[in-house]
Image: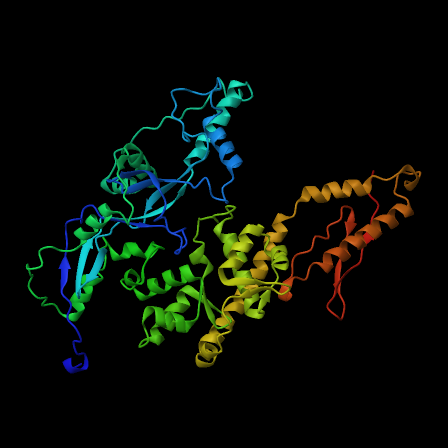
Length: 530
């Protein structure tokens, strides 16, 4: 590209101000509407923990507002601080609402970003750009610490009245653990944990600060420090290439080992492209669960090597309606369990593969029919369906992406190979589900059922102790009814059969098949010895 193709339109001098570099924080209010700010609110108290970059603001409420319920505000203050002048009120404890009414709200911050070295505040004035680095960015949200105090007071009052004495003088089990020598890696992990950071934050005291409204004179003076005063000082012109300059603008975070990124789920595209292609595809599909081949090509930027990408994606995904779905053993690795009910990974993979097979045959899947076949908890089935489909009223669960006709027409060999794979998988699932259903039947239940059948009245037993013909007729009718109900539920969705439980104590059940391939049964009842 020639220089004439990209002419310089205007040159703007950029100045760096460091007066407020170590003190400047950016406040953001993520739950506050953009048009409704806190600029006009009266701040009663302002506190900060500079080391952990935490901020707390107490804002006064407008008690004269038509939207304020005075009686409710007094009730909340009473629950938190107790009744003024009562005997149970503790004199040493400071009242949260000093005016015996809820007259303030609390805003407390969380750190938005762990590292803000790439961010700055800019002021544009007289065709000059002045920037100041940020010390931190915090999100301020409403906090309700008085609710904890209200619950604590209610428990103490109940305990004083003798209503909660169950926990007194009860023996408690104590577990003794011996500390092991901590490695540097474990130490770094412990120092990044939530419990450690919470403990350190609690140890740091709050420092009260003086808050000035953004329209005040003091705020204007502080805002003036955002402009650089030493405008005569200049630095050497940049002598960097385009790619090197972009790396300075958007640097890539260094990692200890690129292979350690393969198991991470919170990975950016820049980190993802540091991995081998197969790991890139695996991580991308593990997060997305379902993607079209064209989307994979675009996200990974492999437009020039689609053949290699197509070979790789078949290693980590299966084809469903022209779309690629991550394999079940990648989502549920061996020797693991589901996060909801703790179902073993083997059963989760089997149930998920069965659902994927149904989607290869139909656009919609009925969850109730599926649950009767794979025998998984409803939470696990819902989790599997939510990953790749959406619920349609009066239709069932529909695959999230439409049928990819373009991929099917362009790669018929891959489609045929995947169809053969699914046919073999369907046979495996049929055998596995049949064995699982047979193994889950309980002999004890059949034995108890047989005992109930054998308990008859006196007029149904002949004089020699053998069952009368009337009793045999009743048992024969029950057996036929049981067989007919089992056979009606034996056929499941898409031709997959479930094993039938036709075992009756004291009866022989030979099986035959007629011309229509409909299972039938002929029952011959033999007298049972008394």
